[in-house]
Image (cartoon, rainbow, N blue to C red; front, side):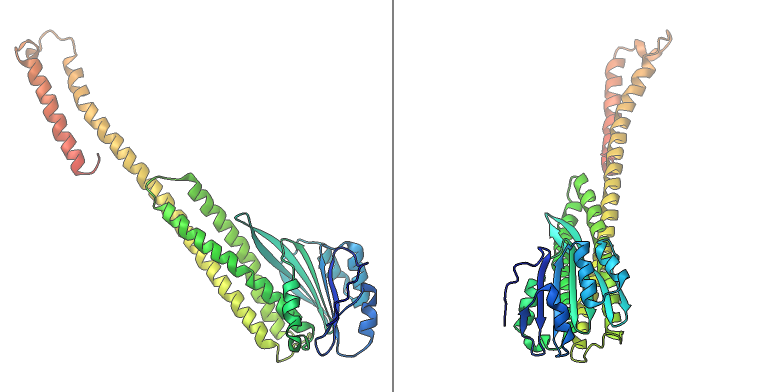
Length: 333
């Protein structure tokens, strides 16, 4: 395989290579794309870009004959995941995800796929497709299937990168569930549960359309996907469906954990209120008796008894002891 370095390519051009019908690679300059496509020898061109300037996209539009609307979408890095057809060319917008410092960062990959070319345009948080190209170049029989094989490898790479993020979510949710049932209430737990549900919702918005894109790719006749490649797209669709199901399950579990957390907080507050009410009852009894005998009436027979003071103290103590035992029995203290 020829890996000639093209030194005067723009910095945003990560890869620009032509693959012949045997899957052998030849690095080319952007200006040579039209020359390669002019020869009907079964080869195809794969161009990889990262946050390109508008002028470069305009040049690729001229080289590959891309539709104006597709180029406009690729220039705008805030597209919803979708698949659109423009004659024999397909435009795909897919959301990518990376876990950075404990939080998920989302990016976009836009793909132009034609009978003899594949253009990938990455924006934001997105891993390079260098490993995808290297793996395919070790399997030239796959590259010999044309740009659809490369398209499958890219989409498979994007979907596979969802799985570790979802696995991290599962581990984090497991840890948060233990914190939910901790003895002391932690405000940070409910905050992180809310953030986790928000990130899962964002992941769902990225994964669910991917399933629809893969389904359309398998049914779309305009790209003429070879029968040998279709099972690979079905495999990616299966992976995306499993990730989507896992995300739905985790969202339900996070919602349940939030409800349990709030319920436990409410129960704990109720227990505190019960204990305060119990102690208030214990204090109210002697206060009531003391206030009764604190009235300044002259004719109160109990005030003149020799043992009235001690009898009163004993009665208060006996009443409070009985009330205390009752409150303990009903778990109010």
